[in-house]
Image (tube, rainbow over all chains, first blue to last red; front, side, top):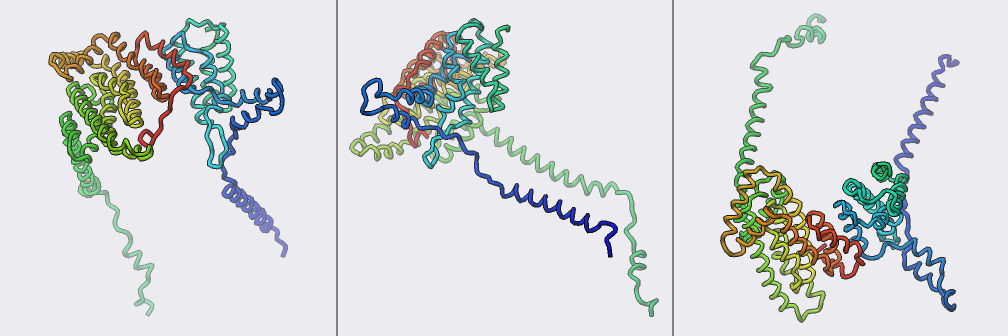
Length: 193
Length: 301
């Protein structure tokens, strides 16, 4: 007897939809829950080892390409935690002597990722992004406080221009909080204000 | 036969549901009033206990408990006091007599720690280094007690703890390098807290400020350590600019210390002490090259 009401078709359609739903639920349940792969950093000792080209006289004995790469891979010089803390406190006090180059360094996201590194149990060296962004937020807050209290440094001062550029770069940060805070601080850096 | 057999439907209809009637006053009382009374009495009972319990925790209570021979009682009091002093509305934070009492305890604790360290130093001097570390753990109770009292003095609005905290921060003579480094860091941190808390003195009502000053003047007129600490506190309240300079001098010496973490802490703590010299010290610290040591040990970590 022919099924005039289309009950079978509707039943199959419903079954198909339930099947799709079940597959989606299973995919969600059994998806790969492995943590995001952190950015693996090159240990400085590897780069330092590549600096020397044995069997050649100076200047060929130095691998100048490796030397350039080394500069972009090393953390800040020892004592950076002390220098950063002192700079931040000077900025909070509104001191006109606040060293702006250190503030710029504190706002350099790449540099902070090199400063804040952790070694995984398997020996890999990774950037501690949370700590790096935290340091940047501290620096942004310090700049904001400093600008509120200190107006003696002119906006067109070369170091102020660099500071402004460093903050402007952070307005495009992949981190939402850093990006928003950088935009706020940029308003205080406006040369018109 | 059929008429004799019970008809379930008919029986149910006859019995029916109980008649619907508005709830009586007694019924409402049974439902709400009685449980309400039980809960009220329970809450009042707990509040009463809490009131009696909190009332008992005055300054004398803490001072008595902190010198109890039983370490459990001592540490329970320390635990309660640490929480009490962190509350900005706590009356104990502005109790000058209590602060002086704690300063006396700290002074005694430091002397006892020094004696114990001397004894241990004699006992372990011939042992290898890793066994010496274990030997210093014998002074852990005394060291922790001194560390607690130093931190507690940093939580007061009345700065009677400054001379003792300065003494701790600058003490480099201890034979227990790691334990002493830990204490020095705690002292510098407490100085930072004290600098911040001192600002709230100006926010106290004028009568309370006057009472604190009168009490400190009375104490300062005497002799001995207690009078000396009271004089320093009074100086901070009456001529803060000059008095701050003394604290900044202490911090300046800490800023030249070999311990890298102490230098970093010092930079942070300078944020809470206003003095013209502070900027110069901070500027020096912005040129720090990371020299010295970064001491880490089970005691510190």
